[in-house]
Image (cartoon, rainbow, N blue to C red):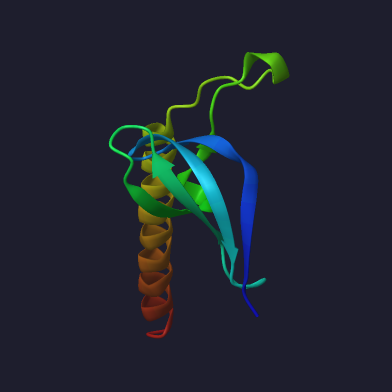
Length: 100
């Protein structure tokens, strides 16, 4: 079952496309990420981002510092390529072992 929650008030967020206001959260269930519906400040475009792609904006009154979202997305790509390298190495080791 999926749920859609309207955020009132909206939440300011940083996205890969710039700053915006999250107005809805879509939850498709425990096997899926949450999806945030965001209206961008620059141009008003509406985009949907999963949890891993957005961050709350800096807020000094609660001690939240500015985060470089592009650095986080890049680190996700590094983790993905590292996993692929480990999978390839494991496959090579398995094949080498099958000759014994």
